Image (spheres, rainbow, N blue to C red):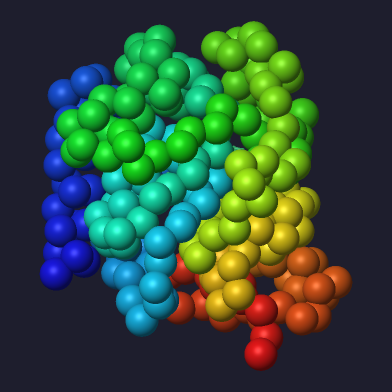
Length: 231
Ligand SMILES: C[S@@+](CC[C@H](N)C(=O)[O-])C[C@H]1O[C@@H](n2cnc3c(N)ncnc32)[C@H](O)[C@@H]1O
């Protein structure tokens, strides 16, 4: 039932964001697709998920979906809230607002504000020089964005950590190094983009992590990657 609702929330989010001026091609190229939502549901359906950490929220589509799939959960989102002007220009659109503007609109619309803690930062490391150069014209302060090296609030730990952020292998490895310190016992890390354009890089980062931290295991379920502790 929550799966159906989550798929519907994605559709509704897209409709709202398109009305706010975001080209549909941009949403389709960046945000979760229905198979990802089914995969996340299948991976975690038998688990008791009450605390989620999301790395890379963008305009909030995946956040709304996760809060719908896991009805009794709260979510902490880490994202630098960059302007989407550079992405929008690729699709011939002019948008000056940051991702935060759209994220807030969706959170308000679905009544999720009380369930969300938002941290405006890069998780674990700054992006590489090419990524900085791409965003710099529309985000002149990008290099002043804080970098999160832990989640401060009361040594908080999470049942589900969803990573859909910087897809370069060294960033994926760095994100996994930090997220696995924040996992509850029996918690899981779910990674987006283990296939497709970024698949090779993402899987390279996961492999580098697993090679060093052999107490963890990795498998692919549907369209997502899953990292968890071996028992
Ligand atoms: C692919 S988008 C996320 C899409 C979103 N999960 C969805 O499905 O709706 C990637 C996001 O990660 C952010 N990002 C990049 N590097 C990051 C980092 N180190 N920590 C947190 N977010 C990061 C980007 O700015 C962007 O907003």
